[in-house]
Image 1 (tube, one colour):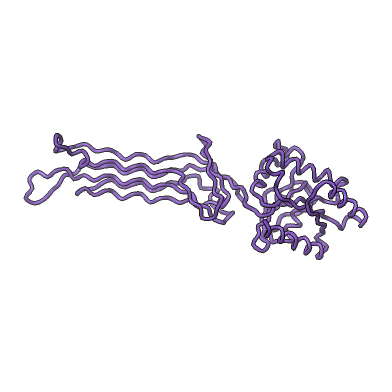
Image 2: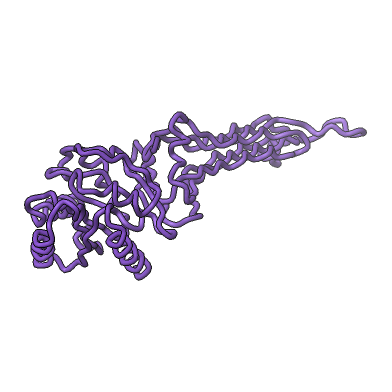
Length: 323
């Protein structure tokens, strides 16, 4: 099952306690203080990796913790610091502190960011020795590490996002171009989660069908609109089964812009799908009407027509390479 968001409690390591110890040496009747400091607690980092399935591995894990620092020891030995914890997350993850609302994003492969700092180690009694305090019995405990509850959400870092009304033919088209294997059916919301496929190294996303009002949460609404924001190229799939292809195109474009105005400037292609359902005159009329509405390049395809699929595939790859 594809998982694109989780919530988890995360804790950095606690600092180890400082200790009270004394020098014990042959021939020295009263040794001075020799208590070591505690080790620092481990920090927590998040790291971006190119693996969109990682959140699925964490679906049943809701607690992460770095290692605590060890207590100090005799002979002024500092305790061992706790090991840092590095949490691998999919490239494109947004990590939000549930209490403060502050977020950080992982947008480059290999990028590593500090999420939580470990606690400082406590002080041993040696640190309290002075001219007026030759036999200090003081020490301090280690500080607790930072902790928080975090919502981790994946915004799919895809090259081309296929969008359109339900039954626009997105799943069938992406399946033919890649091995995404989306469910296909003649009813709304067949695709209930984004499906990804690979086309010559480019990631294509079959974004579940949107409906009018999606920007306000209707249908599957915000659940999938958020995945479009980082898509480099939008592929608007418009089924020729629609009586008004311009209206269908405008509906989806309107919902995208209502969700995020920046999407209005996103590069796009238009694909008229299911050409096998209309005659040539109807196809030409539909294409003409869209050409008057948009400056985007328009392709016509049918999964039953290998030549049209090859033409679209070549054009798509060429466009992606140019971005």
